[in-house]
Each structure stands twice: as C-alpha cells, then as structure tokens.
Image (tube, rainbow, N blue to C red; front, top):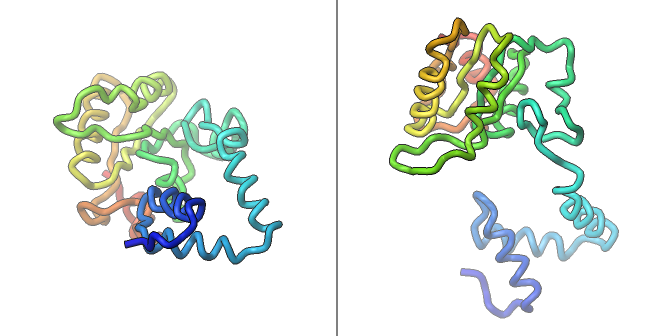
Length: 196
C-alpha cells in the first residue's frame, strides 16, 4: 500500500507509474523517489523524451514496427530478405528475435492477438498482412505459444491457405504460456532455425 502522506503531485506520479505494465505500487514509489533525487537537467531531459514520445516516434507504414521515419530501419535495409515475413504480436517481439542474430527477413506487427470469445478485433492488422503477400515466399508465424497466440496462428494459416506461400511457425522450443520478450536468445534462435 502506498503511503498517503506524500504530497498530491508526488502521489499522482506514483499512480502514473503504477499504471504501467509490470509496475506495482511499491516499484512506482521507488521510481518516483529515484527521479525526485535526480538533478533538474536530467529530469528535464527525461521529461522532454517522454513528451516527444508521440511526436518523434510512429509506426512503420509497411510493417508497423516502431520508427522515427516513414519506414523502420528493417524495412529500409536492402540486405534483408523481403520475401520472408515474420509475423509478431508487438514491436517488443521484434527486438527479442533481432537479438538472436538468426533472422534476416522482414516483419509484420499485428498489434494484438485474437482472443477466443471476444468480438470486434478489427484493430489487428490482418488485412495489412494480406496486402503485403504478393511477392512473399514464406510467412513465419511468431506469436506467443498461448491460447490467443495459437488462435491467431491458426487464423493466419487459414487466411493464407489458398496461396502458394509457405507458412511456418516457430518451433516449440519455447514453453507454452511464455512470452517471446522473456525467452533467452539461444532458445529463441533455435526456435527460428527449427521452425516448421
């Protein structure tokens, strides 16, 4: 329980940090106390970066990765194999896969997963994926090995069933229920190489 003896502005900051994923009230309290102890210049730089988050960054128009330009660095890289697309849920999954140094193709960020029983999941970028498959030889489905990830993978396989595109899925070196961002680089690299 966060102490109520803090000034209101301090408490508001704790509440903002506590609303972030994986940050509880105690961690939020520690973060705000840490920031309070920093010099003004460092805090101003932090505040400016946070303030510019939505103006300096955008989604890549092709793959929906995070980018500072119209296309992200991966989509602009002519050395990457643009005939292979690895489909992931979020940009953080791209970071995890890139750390393995085993994948040299393109990506497509869905922006979410299908959740059985939920309606209106039109925000997931399936149509944008279909718009990109004209010259594609393989689609690697790299969704998390969860119920939602499996449902999404099955849906993508059905969408691409009538095409000549090879559809593969990361090997199950990843444990069921795990998140890609928490997988170690060796396991994730092996899952990429041993996809089926």
